[in-house]
Length: 155
Image (cartoon, rainbow, N blue to C red; front, side, top):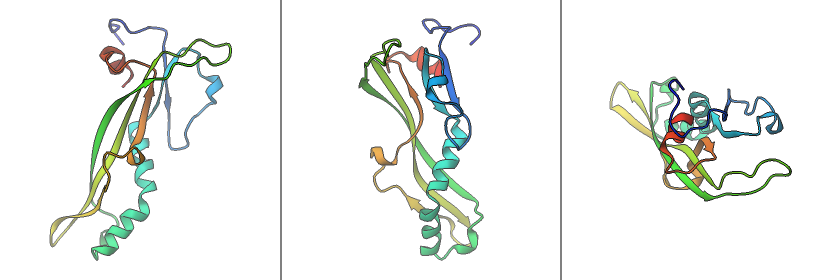
């Protein structure tokens, strides 16, 4: 960051997980002072939609909209950033992990398809939008949720 953000370490590393295949190197190869692992947002969204392919197809079939397989689709997501509390732990001979962790995630709330007759038809709606099971992680940070400068730098 230029100029550097106040109170944010200049020696920290953010490992961006590029693509749908996950980590591009082993956890042991990341610098010891890495404070975050983050998926590319577009890769995380595409991966989540691919996981939901059966739900999307089922929604299209139930509304007799199979001819709209190629869209266009409207996807509504809800983002959330939650403090995970105390996670302090010592890993082998490495440094002690900071005491707090924060998870930035999103939930796919609804998927709609535009058709020529009814305008927009909802083909998927998340039944339990506040459940951890439907939250798709984008970033895990070792930081305090009240440390807005570090969160801003990472995200």
